[in-house]
Structures are given as C-alpha cells and as structure tokens.
Amino acid sequence: MAAKIHIIMKSFTSQANKIEGVIPYAQKIGLPESRSLYTVLRSPHIDKKSREQFSMHVKKQLLVQKSETHELQKKLFWLKRLRLLGVQYEIQVSFKTRLDRKKLQAAL
Image (cartoon, rainbow, N blue to C red; front, side, top):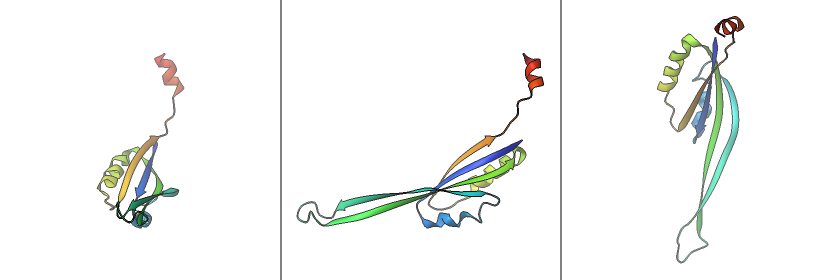
C-alpha cells in the first residue's frame, strides 16, 4: 500500500526557495503568492499626508512525496525535526486502498 505525503509550505522569506535539495524525491508544485500592503500614518496630527507603506509577501509551495507505509513513521519524524526559519508546514497524508469484494461479501 502506498501513501502520499502532501506538504503545504508557507514562507515569509525567500529562503524557502532553497528547499529543493532538502526533501529528496519530492515533486515541487508552485502555488499562488499573496501580497498585502499596509499604509500607516507617520504623524496623526500635523502631517496627515505623510505616510509609510509596508508589504508582506507570502510564498506557497506544495511538495508531494510518495512512500510506503512502513517508511511513513520515519519520514514524518524526519519532517518534524526539519527546521527552516520563517516557514509554516501543513502535512496531509493520503492512502490508496482497494476494497476486497470477497471479504466484504463474507462479512455480509
């Protein structure tokens, strides 16, 4: 039985683009980037037209890695110990199973 590990990574810095060599045998799929702009008044009283602008860029990637079920615990432990600064992880594990009709009919 094969399992797929989907890792959704959100990064706030450009260091996450160097992840290619960190996770071996993984497909890298780029997801849309988001950008938010914030405008702050420098002085609330006198200079109302004096403003400062800040932006936050969030880059997302989806990494898909296939593994066998007996290797799954090792890979999840390895992902837990992997430390990259400025990166948030979301890990999803999916299995592909087949239904045995003979066992199902015997149970019914």
